[in-house]
Length: 209
Length: 274
Image (cartoon, rainbow over all chains, first blue to last red):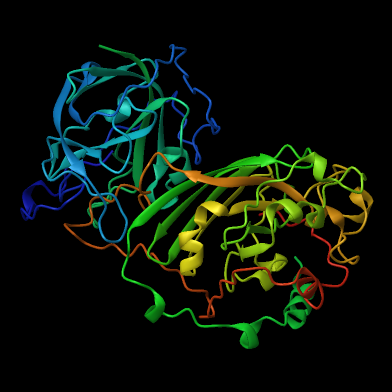
């Protein structure tokens, strides 16, 4: 595990992205989670509810306003994220907030809704600091502009090198309402202020209120 | 692998300079907007193969990502975008298209339904129709029969405008289950008797549909590299040799493609895992 070797040398430059100059090392995935490249078998449209929960019917489109993860004590209003001109996803400006990827579906609607957040920022834990500790069966709630709350249950958690990011697996169509939470992971590279991996939590809609 | 034959293939390809039209930067409009599409590849010829492809259109650049399984391990899988961009409604074939009733849906029979090659989804170099059987530049399935492919290529405006009329087809089956393309499996290819039918018969096909994600992000969620740094994820990947790409639309005569393009006695290398 990395120590915070740069604590004293922190130049204070705010780097966009999960890392910052002096980031807390991310938690590795629990031993039971298999972060094999390619993740799980592709559920080509299958309901993919690894936790055994019942899939709920998709909801109409409505902009998400707040994300809650009770098991991590995370509660965050949401920025909206687009794409940079080079096509990569934008990341939240506020490290304490997660962001919803606006070109994707709204959480609760059919398809792969995506919410991304930083794991750490300039040495301090950020909103998704503990995301990699989530496990199948955990719940996630997204409160929407229409007053309804979409409730998701985690199917699986996986970790991938960023340079082998499984775009198809994460963004492909689904026959149900899905949610992907994304943050950084892997062994933090202090020289380059960079986490080499992404952690992705795959979840499915199991209820609404 | 097929090194010996590669040079023969190259020699046979009439393609290069004569046909190459430069789709240069000048013809690429500033990004007119993006589009995202998905293709679900379903098996043909009872191959058991399936997969998912996603297409991203930005201006005149098309990014193709394919994840498929059930292909012949260690063998190159010719793959293409088939169809017409002039409004003709082609679609994926089914078993009823086996008009000669020999139990194999071959490429010629299937072309009646899915149309001619529009773009060859090679791993490098030209992507035109003439590259249709450039197997030395086609992706190879790994030992588990899985295949991953990603490439960004410049395409014509006609392709951009009619992307939803196109389909992806991957080729290569293994009728006699011996993990290689050979004549014992399904005889000779109707495209060229020097090729096994197993190499050219289609293994799956899928039609372009909309993607729920309106725009597909490139790569991972970029972090830790500094604010607003365009961290060199190249949108355009020009071929290694700097070759110009050709996106040939419309139907070139299939006969022309067959002749002079195909290797003699090409046989996939059963030892060469991906």
